[in-house]
Length: 415
Image 1: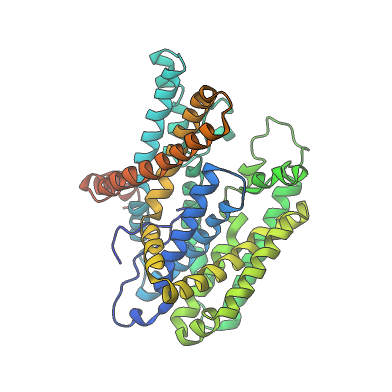
Image 2: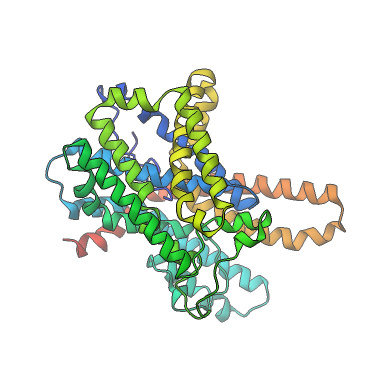
């Protein structure tokens, strides 16, 4: 595949799988871009109108990240230089991410100018957001004065980088063992760690899993986390779920799937790719959503169950559409190829159009038709704007300047 295929970054799926003769016989590899494409469509829609379960597209990227990183490492299977591995990972993720951080800063400065603040305020107020994002730190844990976040999607990049930091250890724990029993035991340990961490986050840290606030319109009580801790304690609510232990089981599922594919591809495909498995996956996914409505105890298990189900039915849906609707499959797969750039840029367009919606809606004097036309037009602007900014971001990512950014930062540190 192309060196610049998106990383699933939310989305940080390793796309270095080479299409050589042997790998061309592994059908599941041809379905990954479709899964990413469908997931990124869900994510864009939920950010435009946060009233359904589209946020669950993130689960797809987490599972595929574990799968892609493990698969590429196993295919090399020589002594891995983890220093070089980290430089390569950071090169694929950080330069376009940093560029989008800068774009967000400039957009927020323009918004402040439009709202009537002076130039000094407009340039200084967004600095907290720029530093927080660029340094891969959530500075709002320490500084609650950050006023506006122009790109809410960027939380996922530090989150997935936390998996990078743990990956060498996870790889030794899960992928390097030769026996099935030990691999499955390691998977079980990872799942238990996820459940224990989530229980602690929910009941001791006033936590609320990321995305669950979208359910508050249907079940308001479920949108409210516990309130035992003082408000000045910053490590609570969604913050408690911004670290890899909260999704460790999902990531490990992808890792174990990669191990199974490399060691016995025929059995792997026979088990995973069949219509009944797709139906089972859909039912598991529904069960995961039902757990959300059970309250806090259900939140401990829901994300893992959702992740297992959604990847099963996404993969099998892709397999079906590849045969029945090849044109649609191809288009959705192309979105998957661009998914990292789309993920990084689309929320900025959502932020801008929502500001425009607030300004323009009163001009229509509560006309339902006029407001609908306005919002359809704004959604079209999001689609066009995301396409343009994604292409710009891709060109920047392919430039020598992006290479230089990593060589002058992480490559020097890890040398």
